[in-house]
Image (cartoon, rainbow, N blue to C red):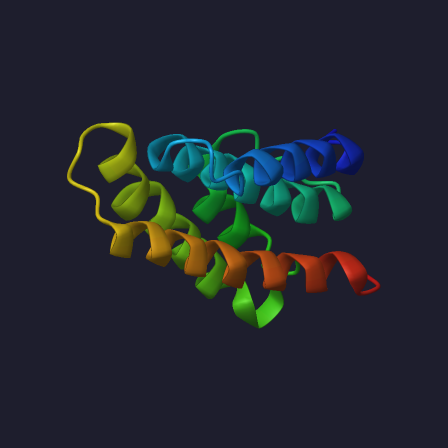
Length: 123
């Protein structure tokens, strides 16, 4: 079973490093991705669900709509945009722009807001 505290520590550590402007933008993009994955995992852990792999976020959320309720599709779509559309530009090449980085951060903070609401609401 996934432990919320472990995911919380990883989320916060990765976020701290992602927000460190001394790190390169490609590194920061990967760290934002890892941070939000662990925050989503933390939300799942609240319901005793363990996603385990970032590639499985969509299927787990669709199969467990009680985690994010009406925001389920929004969460997995934002996450997939980061994972499959934005992150690869930074991770596998040099095709990214500052606009891409800003889009990644904007989607990250939207997901973070949704997740924090889930974690602070009673189940």
